[in-house]
Image (cartoon, rainbow, N blue to C red; front, side):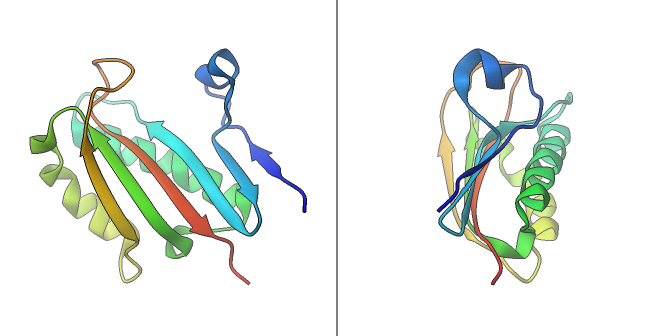
Length: 120
């Protein structure tokens, strides 16, 4: 079975040695993704846009996401993101985990990774 690697063109992909997403065995694995912006909600929206582009490139969409992990340095900043996440996943919410942890750069306030099942 072929493996498809999806690159977003981000500067860290070649520096660190990863790609935005990997499609393998009917699954889409999207790497942890941070976004740009001044607020946690701006960064959340931007990260979701990057993730969505990778999902579409893989042949999937939000309704195909089965698992999502949110990583934030400050768990108190998660609640402002809830309306954005609820709107994104709508009637098809995935299983979810939120982890409070340090991110690669202090300017980042949320990182999101997803796993999706390709539609039949």
